[in-house]
Every structure is written in structure tokens, then in C-alpha cells.
Image (cartoon, rainbow, N blue to C red; front, side, top):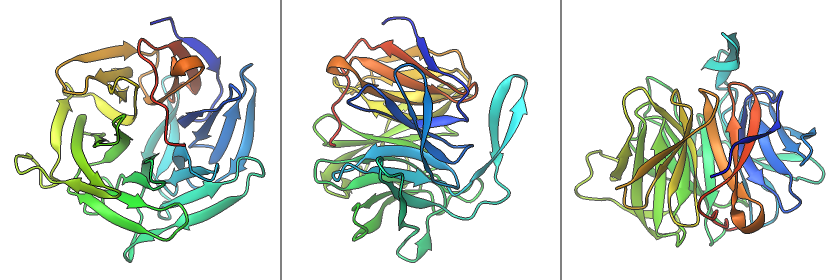
Length: 304
């Protein structure tokens, strides 16, 4: 793997990177409340003012950008050279799923609730080949009853809870063939996997150690926190890691784990792009930077 190259700095807690065909990277700035674009030369442009706390982002089947917005779940403080450190939000107003037109910047709210229960803090999402998307609701620390994995259609016609009983669910991704769903828990540093049986459907493992029905793929050493994730073209699950700043890479069967260090203790996300998907883009949120490097495996082409 090549050395990390800094593409941009001065970002206000970047997350949710999406590599675009023109070489730019769309990402959110959670503390700024925006969807922004980083041009190849490092120029930063605001695409849309989303309000609240935009988090995970993905391109949908209609070419729009779909965002998990945590509703301002965090306040922000500067601590010992780390530009922005989240703390529990004082003005949290509930979360939502938003649709952003990347050309006009128009923002539309698609979902604010599921079955009468408000979304608390949607965090990360991934589209499947059927045009629906899986997403995590991080819930509220200390009361995780609504922390969940959900499935929805981008036109607003369907949303349902699929998996409950997780603690701080964050990153979410699908295996290259779409047959496995991966979810990372932040505070426990655990990576779980379910077999996908259909759009919005998973099989609950009878041997699961948790009531959520998932199988444990990897349990990080104590003190390491897991954030968002991406799956590469060889099926490795690449999880952004906090404290031991970097990317934790877990092989599909969980037998091999590699760590790619990044110079920031709050590394929040990764995506793939460039020729053959060989470039990894990493958000280093504590110091407000976007990095790139050549990845040892090809990236996974996303559904849209």
C-alpha cells in the first residue's frame, strides 16, 4: 500500500465519503451541517446545507445523494489539538433520512420515523442491487432500545426495522455478492454479520451470542471503537477505527485482521474510487482532513 496523501484540510468533522466519477469526493461535514465536495486539487465546495448532523452518504438509483442525518446528536469541542470532538448533543431534535440533489443542492426529508417510532440518530447506509437501502440508527447512549438496523426504499414507500438489540450500531455494508450484511458497533468495537435472505430480510443465527441474531466476525481489543465501514472487492470489511486511529481490515471469514494506521485518533470512514477502485479515501475527522492512498485490493463497485 502506498503512503497516505492529504487531499484536503480544514474540514469540520468529515464523514460519509463518496468517490465520484469526475475525481471529486463528496462527503459530509457533520459539525458544519453540510454535504460538501472536495475537488482533486483540494478545493472544498458546499453542495447543500443539510442542517442537523449529516452522517453516512450514498448514491441512490436516481443519482441523488441519500444521507443519514443524526439530527444534531453531537455538540463540538476542541481538545488538545483535535479540532472537533463530539459530545452528547444539547439540541438533538431527532434524526432523518434525507435526499440531496447534487446538482441543485435541494434537500428533501424522506423519513423521520419507522412504524410510529421516531428515528433517533441514523448513522450509515448502503444500497443493495434491488434499489433499497439498509441503514443503522445509532440510538441514544444509555437507552439503546431504538438502536437498530432498518431497511427502506428511497421513494418513501417502505421503511421497517429488521434487527434490534445492538449497542451503538454504526457502519454497515454488504458483501460483494450481497449475501451478507455487516454492521459495526461503536462502543464495543465489534463487527457482526448476518446472512441476507431477501431485500430487507436476514436470517437470525441460532448460535448468536446476542438477541439480535448476528454472528460475531471480529471483536477489537478493548478501548478501540468502530465507526463506519466499506467492503472492498475481495470481500474484506474495512472498518474506520477510533483511538487506535486507522482502518481495521477483516477478512471475509474473520481469520485475518490487518490495521492500516492513519495519523488521527478519530478516523471515521473509508470509500474506494479511482481507476479499478484502487484508491482508498479516508476521513480523518479529529483533524479535519481527507486522505487518499493506493489500496492493496480493488474496491467494491457499489450498486449505484
